[in-house]
Image (cartoon, rainbow, N blue to C red; front, side, top):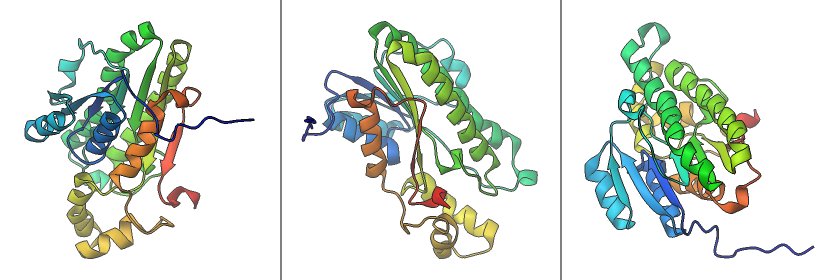
Length: 256
């Protein structure tokens, strides 16, 4: 049997992609990878000073929005072939010390917002018979860590939502999958190092080795471009039979 391989990589020519949290980290890496593959990319981010230059660089569009304001998203209608739910925040604290509004913020942004944006793009995807929902989950979508009750529970919820989306979207050519990286070299991870050091009573220099990478077999952070390469494949035509799945990229953490 002969297998045809596209040596140029996946093509997204003619596709429209919306990437939330798209101005930095994993989102920006996805935006660049998708644009290089031919997609028209909308960079959605709270930071206008970062979103607009990236959109200009990619001949795309910038959508500046506070996605934690979920009430404003309820009547939204969006036209896109690919939606990457990537926007997120992190707060690290013991359960009995967790600020309730911080807990609710994480769940609004990382559970309610993906639901509302998916709800906004599905009618058009169903009409066209094609759609890709890519949810940036985390190793914490399948594993737990102390002091991250909001983040862990939000990612677990996102995993369940992604599976339901896969079941409902299947008859319409729409797939839905999660990507579950370990610690990625992003501003979100770098920002929590000080919080982790304080909680665990160790130096910031020891946080990466003793906390972030202690369970991983491969002792380094995941690079954003590695995550984007998987997202690119999930967005392409070749992944049509892949849905309702979670793709772990954790350096062997979950193999234990």
